[in-house]
Image 1 (cartoon, rainbow, N blue to C red):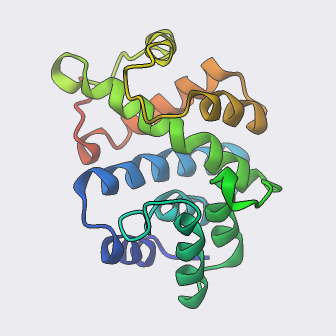
Image 2: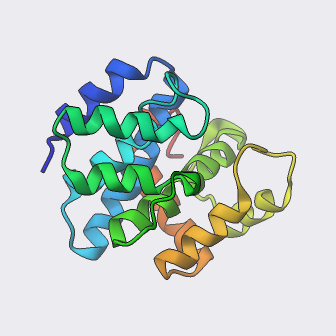
Image 3: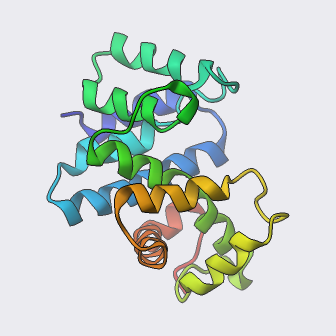
Length: 187
């Protein structure tokens, strides 16, 4: 529905921060992996992952993010299912998550960022060999990556209908596939 190059162009037009671009790439990778798992279109799911926070630098506060971003995406003829998923990834936007795409984006957003953060503090910044139990242990440490909402991580897996450890392992595998692009080594 939307070519990756077009989604990347929108992202880079609005997002200048390398860390936010890497976050977009991590969520895109997880979403593409889930699209393959569920037999969905990887470009659509990947675009939703890539674009979910594209407006964050311009509108860092709720409710402007992602509502103002949704308006921009609609004006650029981004397909409605992607725009809806972007809006639904923020609880305060008031958009219920009704599709599997919506639920997957919500489930992948916080966890992808968290898994990335865990891998960054490992010796050698290596993602290969990262275990779900290590991620769970870090989830209990409220001082680590404190901006990550732990309730959203748990709720995301539940809404997607997957076991949290399975979800963590799945996201680790997805991020391993793009490790060099997001500043991680494969090992």
